[in-house]
Length: 191
Image (tube, rainbow, N blue to C red; front, top):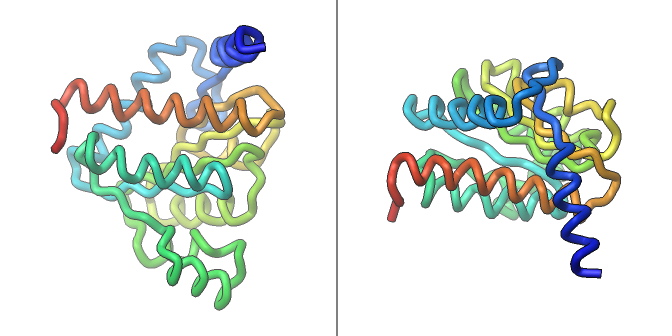
C-alpha cells in the first residue's frame, strides 16, 4: 500500500504541467525556474506576497506565509486573521473574504499565490481578478479538471492532473516548498 501511494505521487509529479498564462511550457526545469525568478523579482522589489486558499489549501497558504517570510526573506501578508476573515465574510459574503482585503492592500508588482484544488472556488477566483486589476502578479496552483477557472487566470499555473484532494494538496505543498527552499539556498538562510 505504501509503495503504491508513493508511486501514484511520483507518477503525478511527472505529469504535472506548468502554464505561462494559458500556454503550456514543455521544459519543466525552465518553467520552474521562471516561477522561482518571479518570486525573486518580487522579493528584490520589496513588494508583498499574498497566499490564499480554502480548507487544506488554506493550511498550505498559512504554512507558506511563514516559510516565505522566515526562510525566503519576503514580505508576506496573511489574510487569515479571524477578525478580518469573519468581518469580510459577514459584511460582504464568503466569496469576498480574500478579494475585499486585496482591494485595500494589493498593489502593482505584488504577487498573489492562489491555491485551489478545484480551481473553481469563487472567493479565490474573485481574489485573482482583484489582484490583476491592481496590477499584481498571480501564480495559481490547481488540480482536478483541466478546464478549471483559476488555471486560466494566472500569470503562471501549476496544474496537478488528479481528482484526489490529498494528492493535489500534497504536490502543491511540495512545489511551494521547493520554491522557497531554492530561494533560501540562493540567498542564504534567514533567521
